[in-house]
Length: 94
Image 1 (cartoon, helix red, strand yellow):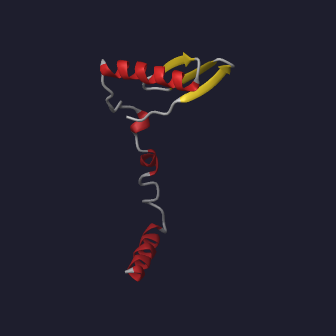
Image 2 (cartoon, helix red, strand yellow):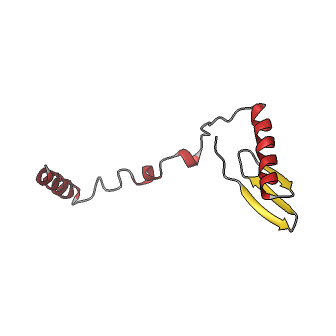
Image 3 (tube, one colour):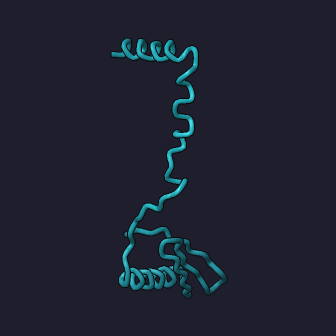
């Protein structure tokens, strides 16, 4: 697994390495490499005791935003003419 790690220099002798979700961990060290190594060790230990899974949570975010507009033009006076123009254009492409 690869994760993006933010490494920050806090002062002359302290570096901090941190990861965002799903495994939010921060570690400090006297060097950049030490901070990253500590983070790697802690992340591995934390992941060893669990697993990452993806689940679908029902709600509005899963809803298709285009459904709101479905059928909005069905009773428009020019609907059939527009559909015929689209069909004619597609026939010219074939």
